[in-house]
Image 1 (cartoon, one colour):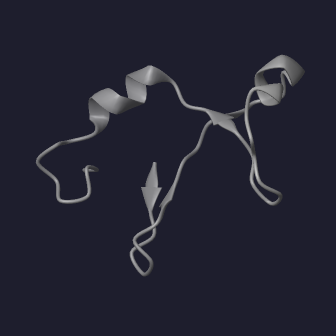
Image 2 (tube, helix red, strand yellow; image 1 turned 60 degrees about the vertical axis):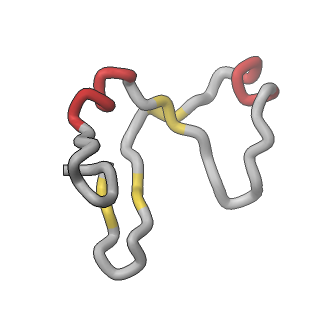
Length: 54
């Protein structure tokens, strides 16, 4: 997970979701994509940081 210091937005790195059955369950707007983020990544997020990321 990366944070854009100017906008405050986050970018998430993950594996592209390409399974048609998974994608059919999502309402993904044009210009966006779905990425799979391993649950283990959340162990690295700190609740003590103001933006939830360390």
